Image 1: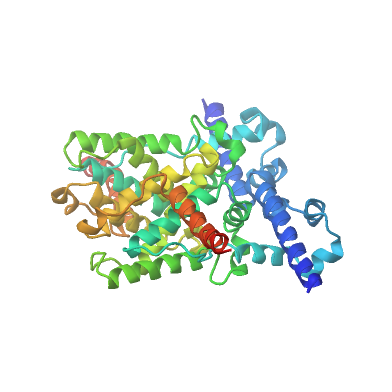
Image 2: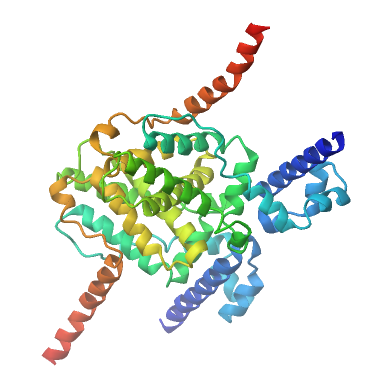
Length: 224
Length: 224
């Protein structure tokens, strides 16, 4: 059991080191030697977990879209906004997301994620728009698949421009603008008026999630 | 005079070859030797026109945003849509634009264009939105600078995703969607209803421009 735990930790350390090297040097500029040095593991340990550079990329892609328990809201559209804004807040701080964003733009790495690295995310947004539609939150003309793809590509454009021009400092503002220009043609006015998508939305959602995670521990302490 | 004309042609051939090499291999992967071979010029000729790889990039950036006589329309917003849609139609066909799009994403090449390679374009859109605002086409809350930046970054996101997932075949559809989701929150309803932004808009605008260019020749022939 301890051995299995150590293997999981080693795998995580390798993936983290790979993310750092890919984020800095890109896929072609990155070498296994650099990853080994950063992860402080042997070549044998790396190849035990990842047989190739491609498998390292797959490992990073697999960690991009997680449904990690975002809070349930009255409106499905708010849940979509919350995820997109939380991601804008997280990306500059999380090397795994930054590496994934960079690797996703390499044409020859597309087949390493099922349907391409952006597809899972576009589908997730599409299914949220679909749910919003069933709940009567959006105009009848809205096509969930098309809107999901549009939101993902616009998010990516904001990320690319924000990285290059501001080192991501204006990313949350840019994603906030994306919703400000898009939601009025998607959400019914009565719903739109209640949606929150200010630049600080992501930070607040993540703080709320952290507080929710800590709560059970506080309760347990109190019962002791 | 003939010598000057030849120099201009040589410069153009070098820039065109550089665009092909940069578009294929990226900035770091491109070598002066590859460019020389493609342009079929001597190293001396290349260095006479461009003292460095950076100057080649500057030459390519300088050819990105041109105001090349797009037709005047009743609404300024239609002029903006026309330019964005024409560009979506042109980019897959024009190596200079494809190279520019690729080079613009290199963080270390930002200072080779005044204010960054996307800034001139964002400012051009902003000034068109500003004119639309003065003409009473847009809602009073619309901030031209913010909208210009949003349109450029969303256009770029669509381009990046379209290149990687469809080799640009769906780019015009994606830019059409961008306007479908954005214009209703920008244009007054009576104006919005008259704007054309279908996927074939760019093709039609470019055909119109070509017809306009040919017209004077036809007239001249008739007068002969």
